[in-house]
Length: 402
Ligand code: NIG
Ligand code: FE
Image (tube, rainbow, N blue to C red; front, side, top):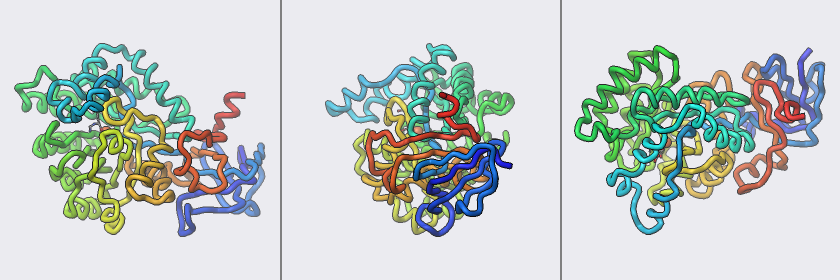
């Protein structure tokens, strides 16, 4: 006997050959927080509660696999400067950018970080997100980096949180003249402490002209691996530094941004099974012109994920559906690819593909239920109220609210 049976719905399972893996007139059985059955209504078994969904579409809960959700303050002032012609790199070189968020975050308490991040997380949940990845990287010292990761760990009500340590995000001001000293601190002190306290599942770095070199990134990766942590990389966002190939060399879960990725980098990612995470809102917000090589990623068979990149500098966005819309309008992805990018492929980019990302028996009952006539609409509407309900580990938001 299942706990819940959802009926009178269409399921976009995101597996199989049909567009969206669709099962029309589907039923979904839930038991003990997991999917027990996803198939035609006729094959369903008995349940304690039967809930007809009035013809709604059910998708996997959305997976936002690249965010910097925890930070203090904001950078609206810098954005105004950019409107007057300053570039993201100019601002970073002048001591603004990431470092200005570092100042605000170092001054914030854990409770304050939880409070502001919770508001953004709430907005994401209202658009169907059930899993969010959260990076550190605005502390750049052990105390603040661990505080950010602890704050991220406290966002877990109704949300699965995957935590990523991004100590190699920017050079902190106190190490301005000692790059090697900071990389030592990341590798010799921060990664061991974070691994010991199990504060993160993965380690990320920003490999870029304004951030860390491939050699520095490689040291961070080697240390992460030695401590049993998976790696991911901000790669080829503003220039081609060979980050995609480096990520592949360390079997990274994902290489992210990739606007400037080369054919060689893509081929290496395909061989390593490294997912591509594309971040169209950051592309839009920085008014970049070089698009990521979507066609080449497709041909190479690299799984393509889409994420919000929610952060105060390049993507002040808490809307997964907007990111999907922009993946289609700016990067020429199809609505089906955009939804796969926010579900199945995003789960892969987090190494969680056995637990979430598709509607299949045995996976977590993390679902989004939408008032749409076709799943294409999820990437089509901008700012519409489409979510009818969300299930997280088998529990409905509506039930919890009522
Ligand atoms: O994903 N590229 C580096 N990190 C962020 C931006 C962080 C910031 O500007 O605060 C990104 O775009
Ligand atoms: Fe990012």
